[in-house]
Image (tube, rainbow, N blue to C red; front, side):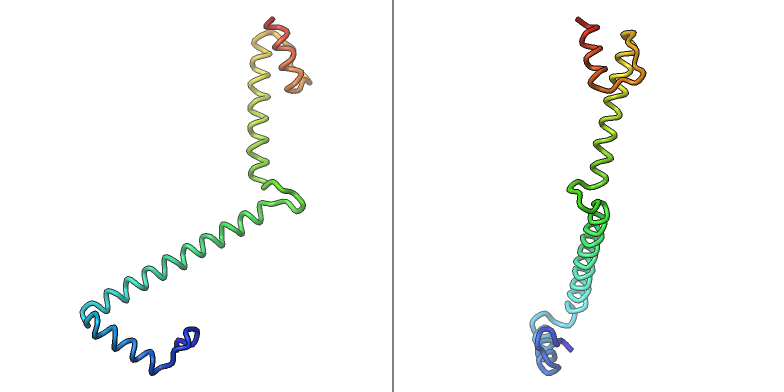
Length: 113
């Protein structure tokens, strides 16, 4: 029955009898429901943790120390910065074709002086 606790059927009956005497027959169903609810929450939390760990593990590229989603975030930031630099350069009349961020920064700085 409760082999993982090394409790046999006789001990389980004694424990159940003690609960009955200590808490009364009217409180036992509510206590059992609460214990079941808590057990379900613990299992759910453990499942969420396991799922999250599996997702994080899948996000890693073998031999790489940065998760793929973080690389995407960095790429998005770099692309946004390049777009801002291109708009600023175009507003200043600077040719933006084929220029990277460093070249655009230098051209903008030179034009602003």
